Structures are given as C-alpha cells and as structure tokens.
Amino acid sequence: MSVPVPSSLYTAQDLLGGFNPWDPMGFTLSRDFAIYREFATNGGPLPASLAVRAAQAEHDAAIADALRIFLKTVQRPLVGIMGGHSLPRDHLAYKAIAYLARDLAREHFLLVTGGGPGVMEAAHLGVAFSSFDSVGPLDEAIGLISAVPKAPILDELFTDTWTVKDEKLGAIDDARKWLKTALEVRAKAPEILPVSLAIPTWLYGAEPTMPFATHYAKYFQNSLREEALVNNSRAGIVYGRGGGGTMREIYQDVERNYYAKTLDEITPMIFFDAGKFWETDPVMGETRAMTSSINVEPTIRPILTLGLVSEKRPKPAVEACLDEKLLFTTDHTSIIKALRGHQKKSQQNLTFALAAEPLKIGTLRMNRR
Image 1 (cartoon, rainbow, N blue to C red):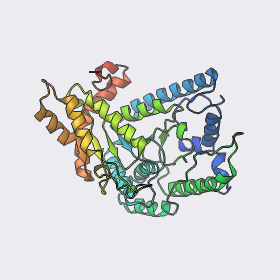
Image 2 (image 1 turned 90 degrees about the vertical axis):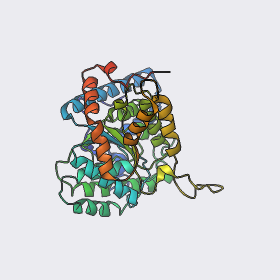
Image 3 (image 1 turned 45 degrees about the horizontal axis):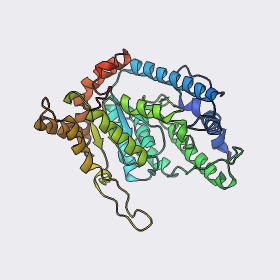
Image 4 (image 1 turned 60 degrees about the vertical axis):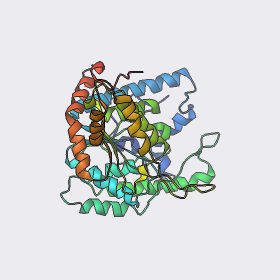
C-alpha cells in the first residue's frame, strides 16, 4: 500500500490537493480520492492481504498519535457535534447547527465532527466564521453555499477494473460542483481559521471532504475512528438530525454513560433540533417514510437510569443529574451551561488520557455488569 505514514494530522490542503474545480472529473483528481480508490481496490474494510492490513494499521496508529499530540497542544474542552451527511445546505437545521457551532467556538470550546457533509460541514462552517463579531458573514456564507445544496450519492461508484462507472459521471461532476462551492465560501473566511477537528474515515471516502476544519484525523478503519470521535468528545456531544451512523454514536455514548462510576463522569448528551427530530415518531407510508424523524427520547433516559441507580447513587440523585446533562433543546444558553458544568471533569479526564493513565477515567473502562 502506497500511502505514507503521516507525521501529523492532515489539513484540507493535504487531502484536497490535486482537485480541479473546472474539470468534470476534477473530484477524482484529489489525493483524498486517490487514497479512497486504493482503499476500495485493496478490499475496503476487509483488507485483501496481511501487508495491506499492516500498512493501514501503521497509518492509523500514526494518526492516533498525531491526534494525541494535537489534543495535548490545544488543551481545550472538546465537544462533539454528530449528525447525518444528507442534511441539505439550504435546510433550516443546517443553519441552526452552524449558528450553534459559532456560539460554542466563541465560548472557546473545540469542536469535533466526523468530517463529512451535512450536519458535520455545518458545524465546521460555523466555526470557520466564528471570529467575526457579527453573524452577517456566516449568513452570507450559508447563502452562497446553499446554491449547491446536496452532496451527491456516490455509492457503487467503480467498475470491476476500478474505473468510475459511466452512469456515475454525472454524480462525479456534481461532487466537483459541491466541493467547488465549498472552497469558494472557504475563501471568504479568515485566512487563518479558528481551530476545529474532523475525524473522518476512508470507509466513507466517496463522500466529498468539506474544507472548513483546520485538522483532520482521517482513519482507514471506521471502528478506530468511531472510538476516537466519541471517546475524545469528553466535554459533551450535540446530536443534530441523522440516521443509522448517528444512532450508533448515540448509543455508544449511552453505553459510556451507563457505566459511569460517579455521576460527575456522565458526559452531557444534547439532542438539538427545532423540529423535534429526536422526539417524534416518523409517519410511515407503504413504501417510504412520509416524515423523517427518529424518536429516541423514550429510551435513553430509562436505559441510563437502569445503569446508574445504585445504593451509592439513589434514583433522585440520578434523575437530578440527567436533568442537567440529558437535554432535548435548541436553547444555546442551556447547552453552554451543561457543557460548562462538565468542563472541569472533561479536562481532568483528558489529562489522564494524555498521560497514559486510562484507568483513572471512570467511563473508559466499562464495568460489564
């Protein structure tokens, strides 16, 4: 495998180098896409040989160490913003995420996402324009980027000889337009962007890489990437609307909190959507959903209560803790308060992690009872 072992986290320029915004095939010319094609050729998540598996493992280990060094250097409370890749740029929920991210960045939280389109891009866009005193530049950016609202679907992209299928050429050109628009908006942000972190994976390498983060910890193995994404979001996680991947992250977060040894270890879980996406059952037709929503609200609190209530943690104390840390809200003040309330413990756990003392982190070693 020809991918060199990185000595630091990637930048957008590292990944998008080679992209040609004027060539219909320009999306496929980037370094990022070349690595993805090789990853797919070599078996994707099931490496075709021990040599490929070893090369990927060496790369991912180097990225993990670069991420450790980055977090040790920055030393800011890390807040995850999770959500789906399919949220259009012209949707009100996209704008709401961007606004929230702007406010969190101005409160000196470091934001991390999975690095893809949709909710993830909206979060980094909000950070990118957070240094302006007015929201005007962010509003302008959202208006410009909404001209190409949806990232194309690039599933089943290759032929048996790993060339792009003829029927996918239009989607490849759509990806070029999507990325070209993002880069044009990026040019209107400050030359030196406020810091934000993306943790993507080449498992989803067909998705265009958004250019608004300053640092990218890109992994081959999605399982390692998910662990890095959820476990490092120690100050709390905000969930915008999403699908199956976001659900996995939600319940991975639930597991982490379920096994918390003390109530101050519980990481805030914030479900953020004005349309009550996470609190409403979908309306289903015979062949498709008539409305899009996933109702997790009835399940999460009972699961956490089951795991947390004990002789040392009576039910009233657990319920009071969850009132503070399990939120279904769009109120920025309440969200910032919940994240601030966990900041001291999150930074303490970050210190333990960076000092290679994981057993001192109460939610890292799960108690399998």
